[in-house]
Amino acid sequence: MYYGEIKNFDIANGEGVRVSLFVSGCTHHCKNCFNRETWRFDFGKPFTAETEELLLAALAPGYIGTQFWNQGRTQEIKERIRRRCCRFCAA
Ligand code: SF4
Image 1 (tube, protein in one colour):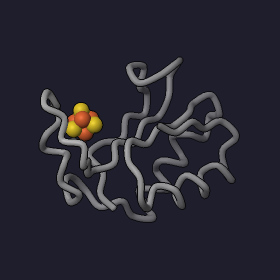
Image 2 (image 1 turned 45 degrees about the vertical axis):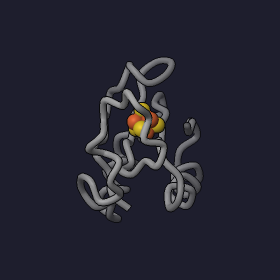
Image 3 (image 1 turned 60 degrees about the vertical axis):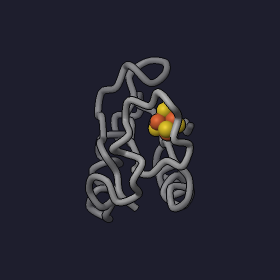
């Protein structure tokens, strides 16, 4: 799995302040998409165990949720994060 960006203090993608992970790859191909470069599933950087630890560290304060924009391998990552963080939401 690849990702385009992790926003540690995101206020644009839901209620409050959250951590957002933008996973690469989209099959919708909407006409007015402003993120066409992220349609490729190999866009950005590989999501590694180290990336997951960075994500968990960003979530550690406990007041932050996280958001995923894709399917596939994200489910297992979501479950691992859910086990270690109490507040979590997924799109
Ligand atoms: S990234 Fe969003 S806007 Fe762009 S094609 Fe996918 S679903 Fe549509």
